[in-house]
Amino acid sequence: MADHPIFTRDIPDEGNGTWIEKPVKEIGNQRYLRYVVRSHLVKPGEDLMKTLVPYFQGKVTPKDIVVIGEKVVAIAEGRAVLLSHVKPRWAARFLSRHVRQLGYGLGLRRPETMEMAIREVGLARILLAAGVGACDRVLGRSGDFYRVAGRQVASIDGPGPTTIPPYNQYIVLAPRSGQTLADKLAKALHTQVAIVDVNDIGAEVLAASAHVDMNLVRELLRDNPMGQGAQRTPLAVLRPTTQEKRLKNWPSPGGSSLNVQGGFVATMPGEGTDAVIWAGDEVASTRSKS
Image 1: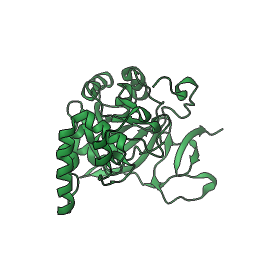
Image 2: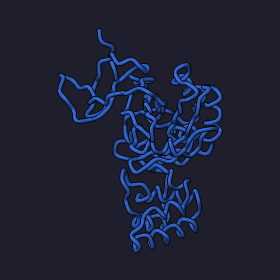
Image 3: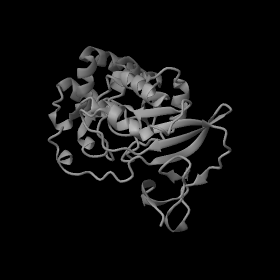
Image 4: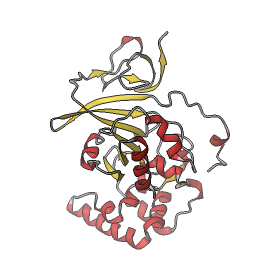
């Protein structure tokens, strides 16, 4: 991937390290603050222990749960495959035409992505999953295709219309070393860590350090606060709180009100004095007030 043009020029990293507070969520009788963290563009071969720790060191507590998007881990492992380098076999082209689209992106409806699924778990397993999926349609069910194909297939990310370049030209496979990374980060940061696969139809924990409540993580991420497109916020912190925080609308330029629930933008948790630069309905970056 290093020969892609985007890796041969400087990439602006405006806003890296910014913590963006999302709406507080209550599970049972406990409220949770949810921060998403803007990061740099992760590259293949990157040592995530060196590049991710600074985003959290000295800022998290043992009760926090640091969340890492699985795509970041997979890219660093070199598990991103250039779309144009994938030549789908006949079976991949045929099967992809019969996949239902669920939410965001094409997923396995793209022949190249289906081809990578076959390479990951084998044609026999994909055919079995497809057969079960066909029965699903008759019975009015959904989801059994991925249950049979397995998490390794369900976690494959095909390129989407708002994916950050150059990964809008890549298929990203499931990470292989998520558990190792979660354990190492937890030890380095003295906190809990979860590696997650989150999209607009749900959340799944792929790996977690000791004592992480995986059901809690799924519920706190169910509404996909980390985003699905070009937000560049593949990191998050989930923090229990006793605060009675009032949920306000996001600030917007010119004092106009947006019908979007949210919090504030802060370079560090607890600070809310930065001016906001908007890009559509998403915060693009922050700029200190003079």
